[in-house]
Structure formats: C-alpha cells, structure tokens
Length: 314
Image (cartoon, rainbow, N blue to C red; front, top):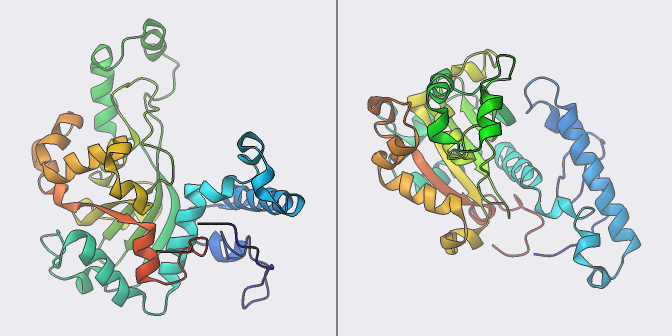
C-alpha cells in the first residue's frame, strides 16, 4: 500500500471529488447515505483530505518526515470511516452489485443465508437496497436497566460508581455507532458493518468496564430499531447479519487483535454471546452466532475491482 499521486478529477456531474484516491466521490454523492444532516461527517472528510494534500505537496520526499509529524496530516490513510465509506459506496454503486454481493456474502456466511425465512441470497437482496453510514442506534433499554442493577459487578473505581448514581447523570451508555448498514427495506434484511483499519476493539463504556464496541454492535443487531426513520426502522433483527471489515493482515494474524478473539468465539458458540450479553434472554440469541462474519477490504477489492483505490495489491 502506498501514496499514489493522482491529479484531482471530477464526477460525471462536474462536482469535485473529496479526494481522488481515498474518497473519489463528491459531497453530494455521499450526503444521501447519512441519516439526517451528514454535513458534519462530510466536513470531516474534506478537512482530512485538504490536510493530506497540503502535506504531501509540501513533502515530496515523504520518507524524510518523522512519524510524529506525519501522523495527523496523513490520518486519511488509516481512517476506517474513509476506508469503509469509499469501499462500500463503490460496492453499492456497482452495475453488477447484486450478483457480486451474492458471491461475497456466500463466501462469508455460506451458500444459504443463515436466516430461516429467507432461503436464498437472491431473496435477501430482492428489492431496492439502501446504504447508510455512521448510523447511531440507541443503547438497548434492557441493557440500561440491567446495568443500573449490576454496576458494582461491572466496575470497581469508586468515583465512577459515584457518578453513575447521580440523579442528573446522562444514560449509563450512549448511542452505538455502526460504521455502515446495508438494508433491504422491502423485507428487513440487513448487514451491519464494523470497520477497523489499525485500531482494536474499543472498550469505552464509562460505567461498564467489561463491555466493548463489538459486543455493543451485536447487542443492537438483535434489538428492533425504533426512532431512526421509516427506512431504517424496517430492519428486522432476525434477518440482520453482522460483518467485521478489516485488512487481510489481521485476519491472517488474529492473535494480534482483541476483536478477532471475541469474534471467533462468538461465531463458534451462542453460549459465548450469552456470557457477554447477560441481559438478553437465551431465545433472542438463538442462531445469532451463525449470522456473524468477517470480510476484508481485499475481499471487497477482489469482488469489486476499484473498491479500494489506495490498495496496490489484493
């Protein structure tokens, strides 16, 4: 993988792309894929691209720059939001999308969908698909109630426990952000994508030191969606798949990442999921392990050439 200098280019509509390599789309092309006003996300992408281009123009010999100096201006090179948006937008817009998606999903989950009432991948994808980025799902009410009753079993620092008991505190867990959601509103079939490039699975729940981003995402996967609008609310939990999306490097070396150990455990046994989702009834987790998968950006690039323009090999 390397920096490839490419002159700026425009979309067919004449609008300038955000970045010719890392985000070859105009802001208007991405806006429709965000819930509500996506300007905050698009502005982040634009600022990141501008910093990157300015830095690379000022440092023609990039090997002569210290890591500490290059890290922020070249952040776009490792930003999982950029990687997932660019790659999945390319997949979504591909003229042979459904045919190639069937092959991709079959390679990840098996020839038959792990969904009892949708017998084929063609049935899953039949209808007008939608793609959303950075979707914020509310924390499941059942988890919030359970955590309030088990605080001392989930944390051990006194000031954290004191803050959790404040009457005026915010909810014990904030929204769960899912990097991308591919949804078929006609039948409620969906794939939730959690993307990582270099980062590991975050454990940033202030009042629950045993919870992490992977567990949180699976938790909202099995929860009905309410309040996100008429399209996203059509997602059906028992017809929803979860897909980890990472570079091939970490699927080849799963011992290097916490999310890999967790995902492999979860994919192998519903009992492991029940251990980490204690607030869930066992019947709600039945079959969930078979609906968890792991794809790589290289998989997307092989199935949809051009999906990751920054990658020189797949």
